Image 1 (spheres, helix red, strand yellow):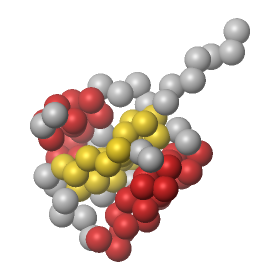
Image 2 (image 1 turned 90 degrees about the vertical axis):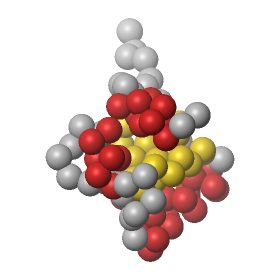
Image 3 (image 1 turned 180 degrees about the horizontal axis):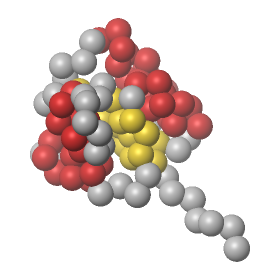
Length: 92
């Protein structure tokens, strides 16, 4: 899968976490299905994301830039990390 395809999955996701802190929280809760990190992000910022994903067995996809990741998330600024989240069904 190309980075463009990966960003398309993120863009089309019904729920996502944006930013390193929110992404780590989502991984820790077990809500992250797939994690994305920007290749131009500061290593010290994305290291906790990569570590949490490795501990939980969540796939990590590296994308070209923070700008591209931010756009895929629908925000006007760059993003260091993001995650596609599990959508739980509404209780009936």
